[in-house]
Amino acid sequence: MGKAYDAVQRYIDSMKAKDLEATLDCFTDDCIYYLHVGTRPFIGKDYMRKGITILWPHQVASRWRIVNYVEDDNKIIFEGIDEYDQPDGTTVKMPYMGIYQIKDGRIWRGRDYFDMKGYLDMTKGDSNQYLLDVADTMHEQP
Image (tube, rainbow, N blue to C red; front, side, top):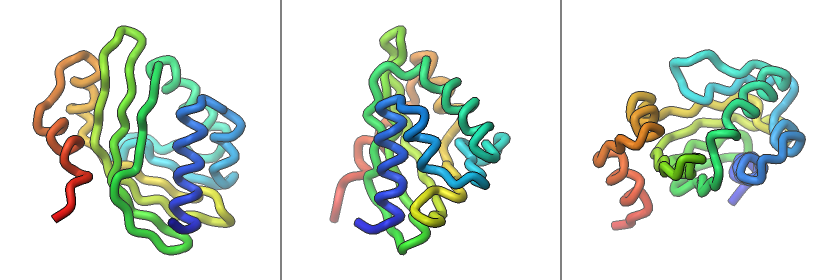
């Protein structure tokens, strides 16, 4: 595991711990982060702060993880599973892909790709079996 992986894993760990300052420290001051490509990005740490704090009340227990990745020192491309429980007991288990660029050990640019409709349905307890199948099999090796 290299520098890019370490930077993203530090972000994941701080999000799971709901440590706002540690999470913000994972990003450069001039960061641009697309939580979902196709929606408005979080630009800069002030907007990151607002966006992050909106997410946390909906996530009781997070099991967010990277499953497969390729990287060099300043870029990582990965697929993972954003899995968490909601306060009402509903479990969300969303496969996604991300491409993050790293500058000075911090996330400078981040883009996450996932099925927004499938995600929103999962938050309402209506899981798409095909998405769950992807999440359950992405760790398999030939």
